[in-house]
Image 1 (tube, helix red, strand yellow):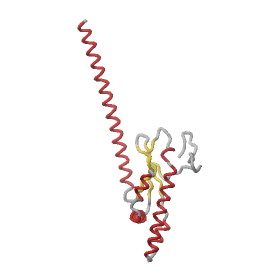
Image 2 (cartoon, rainbow, N blue to C red):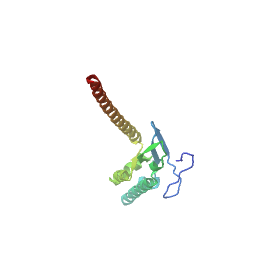
Image 3 (cartoon, rainbow, N blue to C red):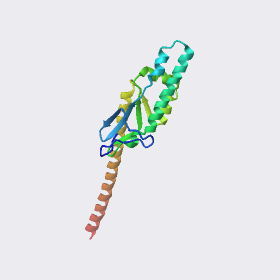
Length: 176
Protein backbone atom coordinates (compact mmCIF):
# COMPACT_ATOMS: atom_id res chain seq x y z
CA UNK A 1 0.00 0.00 0.00
CA UNK A 2 1.26 3.47 -0.85
CA UNK A 3 0.24 7.04 -0.15
CA UNK A 4 -0.81 9.63 -2.76
CA UNK A 5 2.86 10.39 -3.55
CA UNK A 6 3.67 6.70 -4.05
CA UNK A 7 5.58 6.28 -0.78
CA UNK A 8 5.30 2.89 0.85
CA UNK A 9 3.05 2.91 3.91
CA UNK A 10 4.34 1.41 7.14
CA UNK A 11 2.19 -0.17 9.82
CA UNK A 12 1.92 2.17 12.81
CA UNK A 13 2.36 -0.67 15.29
CA UNK A 14 5.03 -2.85 13.70
CA UNK A 15 6.77 -0.37 11.41
CA UNK A 16 6.62 -2.97 8.63
CA UNK A 17 5.50 -2.35 5.06
CA UNK A 18 1.83 -2.99 4.27
CA UNK A 19 1.92 -5.62 1.52
CA UNK A 20 -1.30 -7.59 1.10
CA UNK A 21 -1.33 -10.35 -1.51
CA UNK A 22 -4.22 -8.90 -3.51
CA UNK A 23 -6.21 -5.69 -3.56
CA UNK A 24 -9.37 -6.09 -5.61
CA UNK A 25 -10.54 -2.78 -7.04
CA UNK A 26 -14.30 -2.72 -7.32
CA UNK A 27 -16.13 0.05 -9.17
CA UNK A 28 -16.55 3.41 -7.43
CA UNK A 29 -13.14 3.33 -5.71
CA UNK A 30 -14.00 0.40 -3.44
CA UNK A 31 -11.33 -2.10 -2.46
CA UNK A 32 -11.28 -5.53 -0.88
CA UNK A 33 -7.99 -6.69 0.56
CA UNK A 34 -7.09 -10.37 0.37
CA UNK A 35 -4.11 -11.85 2.15
CA UNK A 36 -3.18 -15.47 1.63
CA UNK A 37 -2.16 -17.35 4.77
CA UNK A 38 -1.32 -20.98 5.36
CA UNK A 39 0.93 -22.95 7.64
CA UNK A 40 1.12 -26.29 5.93
CA UNK A 41 3.43 -28.06 8.38
CA UNK A 42 0.80 -29.09 10.98
CA UNK A 43 -1.59 -30.21 8.24
CA UNK A 44 1.14 -32.19 6.52
CA UNK A 45 1.98 -33.92 9.81
CA UNK A 46 -1.73 -34.61 10.44
CA UNK A 47 -2.26 -36.22 7.03
CA UNK A 48 0.86 -38.36 7.28
CA UNK A 49 0.31 -39.54 10.86
CA UNK A 50 -1.43 -42.77 11.84
CA UNK A 51 -1.35 -42.28 15.60
CA UNK A 52 -4.72 -40.84 16.71
CA UNK A 53 -3.28 -38.99 19.71
CA UNK A 54 -0.69 -37.32 17.50
CA UNK A 55 -3.34 -36.55 14.88
CA UNK A 56 -5.31 -34.67 17.54
CA UNK A 57 -2.16 -32.74 18.48
CA UNK A 58 -1.46 -31.81 14.85
CA UNK A 59 -5.08 -30.73 14.32
CA UNK A 60 -4.78 -28.53 17.40
CA UNK A 61 -1.48 -27.16 16.08
CA UNK A 62 -3.22 -26.32 12.80
CA UNK A 63 -5.98 -24.46 14.68
CA UNK A 64 -3.36 -22.52 16.66
CA UNK A 65 -1.60 -21.66 13.43
CA UNK A 66 -4.79 -20.36 11.81
CA UNK A 67 -5.60 -18.37 14.97
CA UNK A 68 -2.11 -16.85 14.95
CA UNK A 69 -2.45 -16.01 11.25
CA UNK A 70 -5.81 -14.25 11.60
CA UNK A 71 -4.73 -12.44 14.77
CA UNK A 72 -1.62 -11.11 13.05
CA UNK A 73 -3.65 -10.19 10.00
CA UNK A 74 -6.18 -8.29 12.13
CA UNK A 75 -3.35 -6.31 13.74
CA UNK A 76 -2.23 -5.10 10.31
CA UNK A 77 -5.59 -3.31 9.87
CA UNK A 78 -5.08 -2.90 6.12
CA UNK A 79 -8.38 -1.05 5.59
CA UNK A 80 -7.24 1.93 7.65
CA UNK A 81 -4.29 2.43 5.29
CA UNK A 82 -6.31 2.60 2.08
CA UNK A 83 -5.96 6.18 0.81
CA UNK A 84 -8.83 8.40 -0.36
CA UNK A 85 -10.53 8.53 -2.76
CA UNK A 86 -10.44 4.75 -2.47
CA UNK A 87 -12.23 3.06 0.40
CA UNK A 88 -12.10 -0.45 1.77
CA UNK A 89 -14.33 -2.67 3.81
CA UNK A 90 -13.29 -2.93 7.45
CA UNK A 91 -12.56 -6.62 6.96
CA UNK A 92 -9.64 -8.35 5.33
CA UNK A 93 -10.21 -11.65 3.54
CA UNK A 94 -7.79 -14.32 4.73
CA UNK A 95 -7.51 -16.79 1.87
CA UNK A 96 -6.43 -20.29 2.88
CA UNK A 97 -5.33 -21.99 -0.35
CA UNK A 98 -5.68 -25.53 0.99
CA UNK A 99 -9.37 -26.35 1.40
CA UNK A 100 -8.72 -29.63 3.22
CA UNK A 101 -6.52 -27.93 5.81
CA UNK A 102 -9.09 -25.18 6.31
CA UNK A 103 -11.91 -27.70 6.76
CA UNK A 104 -9.84 -29.66 9.26
CA UNK A 105 -9.14 -26.50 11.28
CA UNK A 106 -12.81 -25.43 11.19
CA UNK A 107 -13.91 -28.91 12.23
CA UNK A 108 -11.36 -29.07 15.04
CA UNK A 109 -12.52 -25.70 16.40
CA UNK A 110 -16.08 -24.75 15.52
CA UNK A 111 -15.58 -21.20 16.86
CA UNK A 112 -12.53 -20.48 14.70
CA UNK A 113 -14.38 -18.74 11.85
CA UNK A 114 -16.51 -16.67 14.23
CA UNK A 115 -13.49 -15.63 16.28
CA UNK A 116 -11.75 -14.48 13.11
CA UNK A 117 -14.89 -12.61 12.07
CA UNK A 118 -14.90 -10.85 15.46
CA UNK A 119 -11.36 -9.70 14.61
CA UNK A 120 -12.60 -8.37 11.24
CA UNK A 121 -11.05 -11.20 9.26
CA UNK A 122 -13.13 -13.28 6.83
CA UNK A 123 -11.57 -16.71 6.42
CA UNK A 124 -12.12 -18.03 2.92
CA UNK A 125 -11.04 -21.21 1.24
CA UNK A 126 -10.93 -22.23 -2.38
CA UNK A 127 -14.63 -23.10 -2.38
CA UNK A 128 -16.03 -19.90 -0.94
CA UNK A 129 -13.62 -17.10 -1.88
CA UNK A 130 -15.48 -16.10 -5.04
CA UNK A 131 -18.84 -16.28 -3.24
CA UNK A 132 -17.58 -13.98 -0.47
CA UNK A 133 -16.21 -11.48 -2.99
CA UNK A 134 -19.48 -11.52 -4.93
CA UNK A 135 -21.50 -11.00 -1.72
CA UNK A 136 -19.32 -8.01 -0.85
CA UNK A 137 -20.01 -6.55 -4.29
CA UNK A 138 -23.77 -7.10 -3.91
CA UNK A 139 -23.82 -5.51 -0.45
CA UNK A 140 -21.92 -2.48 -1.74
CA UNK A 141 -24.36 -2.13 -4.64
CA UNK A 142 -27.36 -2.36 -2.29
CA UNK A 143 -25.80 0.20 0.06
CA UNK A 144 -25.25 2.58 -2.86
CA UNK A 145 -28.81 2.04 -4.08
CA UNK A 146 -30.13 2.83 -0.60
CA UNK A 147 -27.99 5.99 -0.52
CA UNK A 148 -29.29 6.98 -3.95
CA UNK A 149 -32.87 6.37 -2.84
CA UNK A 150 -32.31 8.63 0.16
CA UNK A 151 -30.97 11.36 -2.13
CA UNK A 152 -33.94 10.98 -4.47
CA UNK A 153 -36.38 11.20 -1.53
CA UNK A 154 -34.58 14.30 -0.24
CA UNK A 155 -34.68 15.96 -3.67
CA UNK A 156 -38.36 15.05 -4.11
CA UNK A 157 -39.14 16.48 -0.67
CA UNK A 158 -37.30 19.69 -1.54
CA UNK A 159 -39.11 19.88 -4.88
CA UNK A 160 -42.48 19.52 -3.14
CA UNK A 161 -41.54 22.22 -0.63
CA UNK A 162 -40.52 24.58 -3.43
CA UNK A 163 -43.65 23.78 -5.40
CA UNK A 164 -45.73 24.54 -2.28
CA UNK A 165 -43.89 27.86 -1.83
CA UNK A 166 -44.46 28.69 -5.50
CA UNK A 167 -48.18 27.93 -5.23
CA UNK A 168 -48.48 30.12 -2.12
CA UNK A 169 -46.71 33.00 -3.89
CA UNK A 170 -48.76 32.49 -7.04
CA UNK A 171 -51.93 32.54 -4.95
CA UNK A 172 -50.81 35.81 -3.25
CA UNK A 173 -50.03 37.26 -6.64
CA UNK A 174 -53.46 36.25 -7.90
CA UNK A 175 -55.12 37.77 -4.81
CA UNK A 176 -53.18 41.00 -5.23
